[in-house]
Image (cartoon, rainbow, N blue to C red; front, top):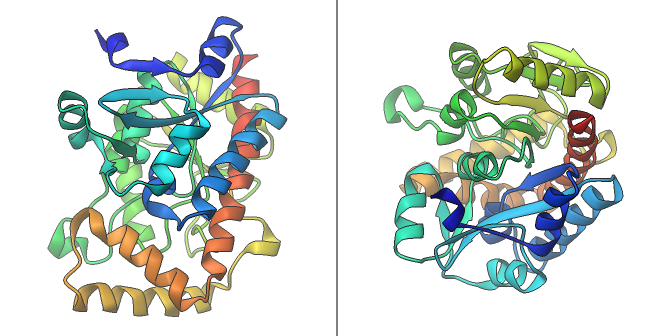
Length: 303
């Protein structure tokens, strides 16, 4: 039944036929994560990086109620410019599909759709997590629960540094989600290469990462993995500087009564403003780097 809701691009269909490695990409970063035209330019560049590294990109979105696995240039442009695209997590998928609306997939819903399409590797910027102050608000991203239940490996630059990283890692540990550092022992914090926290395990090659991923699922242990790949050194922002910026952004979010799924877009936009755009450059750099590593891991998994 799922198949009637899925629509594959020609490129992804061809890749499936030829058993080529495929890498899933989210679309919230296009519709809600970056300003135009950087959003559509970055989306196309990221897809090309995956192709150049020997895999096939599958950007995922809901368009007119269809779960699109792979998007055309026209569909990318639509997501980048339309105001009629909702942010779509797990809870939103049934509504958007049933009412034939448009949605940009988050980490959680991209994982769900990737698993429906039998895609094992997903590249994003950073995962969501436990928000600061969650002991009062209970604001915890659906991304974490999805990592606990859905068999997709997520290549990211750690968790967004606007979150409570310690509690995010505790939640992942409770739900048995391995956090694997790619060439690092330290858990990266999105804009910065370092945080006060360590990863569970370190790998130094795509082959090592693929071996852990495949073994986890072969053992019958359901759920995803976080492959934490730090932002390249040349584009990383200073940790102390970013912490002060984030504190100010959080203060403004509170003053403006921003809650729920509006929190992350507000904070990222405010951080961009307060860093004079350097956070946007960092965001673009880290997603491109993740695309390169994700493609290599997808190729190793196919072997």
